[in-house]
Length: 264
Image (cartoon, rainbow, N blue to C red; front, side):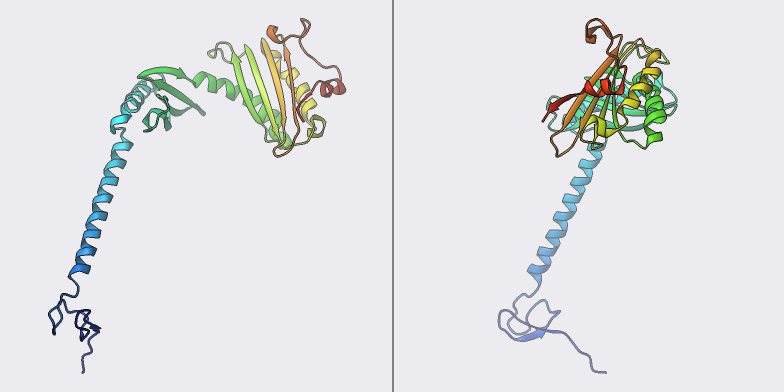
């Protein structure tokens, strides 16, 4: 059987030669040495870069880079604190501000844990524990179970809630002062149009009786529009009383008339 060979042209003498030939059989010019050398050098360079990147990933994951000293220390301190105070807690994830190359003066690091169905964080700075959020998370869960589970979820409402506590978190159930902010987004162009705000006022007026004091702020937001309404009312919160009395409403009309149009 006749054997076929792939042919090419010598770039020096322009004669036809075997494509696999390293040298031209006529003029002796090198055909493929430079191409192979370039390819080999490229592969070597890529291998070195990959190895260097792997080393950086390993060092970064263990906070062994020169600028990550405090992240490594804070991580160790937080884990030791958690093992002593929350031996059954499961570590979830961490947020390490001090591990970044550009820290912007942020040397705080946090690790998030889960215990008894609660997610909470422990925060350290410069090797010292500065905040243990377990009791705060427990208090937030207490009021989420009331406001979200009993009021918002049955109505199919997705409303942002923020809490501000004025007292000792170690008290459980929490009965001291509480600030609640409801941020209502794109549910109406006015408080009346939102529709459920007065119902919440009546609901919380009853549920909030277990607290020594509370203040409620309701914000009505409309993205890409001009309306922004706000109302705050309170019970037994001395620095926010009007004429020495808590702000309460006897009628729905009185409640909605108390809202202020902040921007227009």
